[in-house]
Image (tube, rainbow, N blue to C red; front, side, top):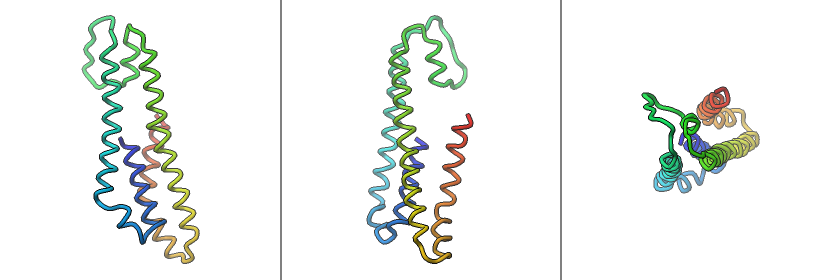
Length: 148
């Protein structure tokens, strides 16, 4: 859900910088709540899908895992066929991983091109400082994901 929320946040910055006069009309509270609820729904459906597919598997022996375990590690312990589960994991990773990253990259390219068209240095600084904190969070989030 984090990467979906980061995508929504960059869309908010995109509207604030590229369409400042329309910001209050586009990003009204009802629309923001709707976007967050859609992110929550997508994340919940994804988690529910993996959980229900995991319940259909059979395991060779009784194992009690006293800590949180990654889905791929649990799939390795199953005795039944996990081909469909692996396909679902890969497809959901691609859909929920690539789509937000492409949205973030697209929005930031539009933001940077819009900032470069601002004539004053003070205006450029103010516009970039609006995105600086979010850009650092995105870098930390995806930098950590790439490093792990």
